[in-house]
Length: 299
Ligand SMILES: CC(C)(COP(=O)(O)OP(=O)(O)OC[C@H]1O[C@@H](n2cnc3c(N)ncnc32)[C@H](O[C@H]2O[C@H](COP(=O)(O)OP(=O)(O)OP(=O)(O)O)[C@@H](O)[C@H]2O)[C@@H]1O)[C@@H](O)C(=O)NCCC(=O)NCCS
Ligand SMILES: Nc1ncnc2[nH]cnc12
Image: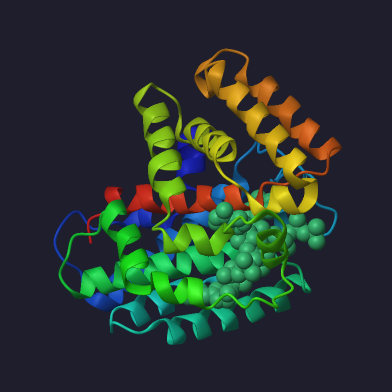
C-alpha cells in the first residue's frame, strides 16, 4: 500500500533522470509534475481529520475526492507554466495573474468550489522560485526554494492583501490577527520547512511507510499552525481544540505507536462532529511533500 501510494499520480517517480542537468523547459515540466503529484498524494491520503479523502468528504458537504481530482486536472498546465515564468526573474504581478487565472480554471472545473486556492498560491510561488533558481544554475534544495519566495516576493505578497477583502482568510486576519497563507509564504514557509518536513523525514527514518509519514507530518502541522480554515469554522476555541488533540496524538507516539490508525480515525470523526476542517494544514502537507520530492530528484 505505502509504495503504491508514494507512486500514485507521481510520474516523476517513474521517469526521473538518473543525473545531469535537464534543459529548462524539461525542468519546468518536472517541477509541475512534482507539484501535481504532491497535491494528489495529499488528497489520496487517509485518515486525515475533517478533510476530504477517497474514503469520505470529512467535514465538507459540497465536495468529494472526485472534485479534487477534477480540480487537479484543471491545474495541470498551471504549475509548469508558473515554474517557466519564474525562470525569467519576473516581478510578483505576472505570477499573481497566472494564479488568478488558474483559480478561475479551478472554479470552472469544480462548479465554483474552492478546492485548491491555497495550493495554487503556495505551490505556484514555490514552482516559480524553483524555476528562478534552476535558471541561475543553482541547486534546488527545500531551504533555497522557500527562502527564494520570501526574498524575491515577500514584500509584494504582504502588500497585495487588500484591507477590504471579503475572503475567509481576510476575515480571519481582521478577527484573529493571523496571517494565514500570505504570512506563511512571505516568511518562506516556516511551518512546512521546520515542522512538516522534519516530521515526514523523521517518521520515515524510524521505519514508517511514506503514507504513515505523511499522516505524521499532517498531525505535526495541525498541532503547530494557526490554520485560518480552523479559525474560520471553529473560532479560537476550535483551533485550540484541534491543536491540542493533534499534539496529544503525537505525544502518544503518533503513527509509530501501535493502534495509531483507530486513534487517527477517531480524531477524524471528532473533527467531523465539530465541523472542523484544517485546509491550511492540508495545503502545507502538499508543500511538505513537494519540498521532500525536490531532494529526491536530480534536475
Ligand atoms: C493569497 C490568497 C491565497 C488569499 O488568501 P486570503 O488570505 O484572502 O484567504 P482565502 O481566500 O480564504 O484563502 C487562503 C487559503 O490558504 C490556505 N491556508 C489557510 N491557512 C493557511 C496557512 N496558515 N498557511 C498556508 N495556507 C493556508 C487555505 O486553503 C485551503 O482551504 C481551502 C478551503 O477554504 P475555504 O473556501 O475558506 O473553506 P471552507 O471551510 O470549505 O469554507 P465553507 O465551506 O465554510 O464556506 C482549500 O481550498 C485549501 O486550499 C485558504 O483557503 C489568494 O486568494 C490570492 O491572492 N490568490 C490569487 C493569487 C495567486 O494565487 N497567486 C499565485 C502566484 S503569486
Ligand atoms: N483534502 C482536503 N480536504 C479539504 N480541504 C482541503 N484543502 C486542501 N486539501 C484538502
